[in-house]
Image (cartoon, rainbow, N blue to C red; front, side, top):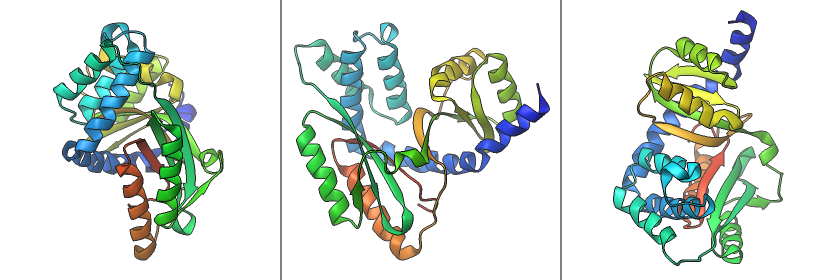
Length: 254
């Protein structure tokens, strides 16, 4: 393996790799105790079953991937099964994807992704949340250009060099592989996320902590305690909204 190429990859995202390990730990703990997450995954699984053309995971790669994410978030089996049964039925409920961008205090940036059956309601709700919680909603592209769409794979392990070599041998387009506190964090080009997952499975990885397409900030800001409290309130309010599926931001000390 070319040493210059390897060095370039390993330096690309390594600080974010350490940050991501901490985010995963917090996210997993929150997901396991938050019934709102179950409901949101129920919607996502229903949509995946409808859009993928089949309620059978083995015949619907989008559904299979979504179910795997739900299991990583500790979503109960009955929630998954009920969402699939709904998709198998006569329900014609239609959901629309959305993305809203905005600013919090002191240069903080936020992107929230939505999945809703009522776009007008969602737009109004998101605008109100920003306005009431110290933020400002912005136009399309105002924030997202400062984030990179990235495939992220996290699993237990301690040898990032070996993992990197295996992925490159499998011709996976890798941005970085790093290790933090017993977790391996892999960043791929977004188009190679699934290829990376399959390569790791073929190499013996049986369980993943996280497999996801994420928006990773190119630069981060650290907020003072007062601004951090305002920012956290804004993020919490967005995450509590039923139509908001994911919230991304560039604050390092959350």
